[in-house]
Length: 46
Image (cartoon, rainbow, N blue to C red; front, side, top):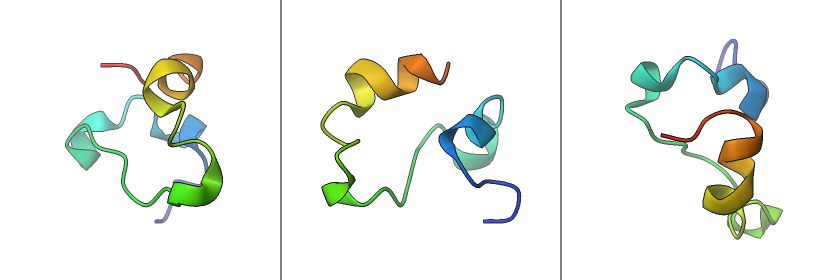
């Protein structure tokens, strides 16, 4: 997606994505800690 190359790029753009993160590979390791750590670390909770 143009203009989105990292989780950092999602900050402040939740309306564009209806509050969803789509397309993370299940085997990437992030899915297991997504809600507990990753969203908070990038300021994307809520």
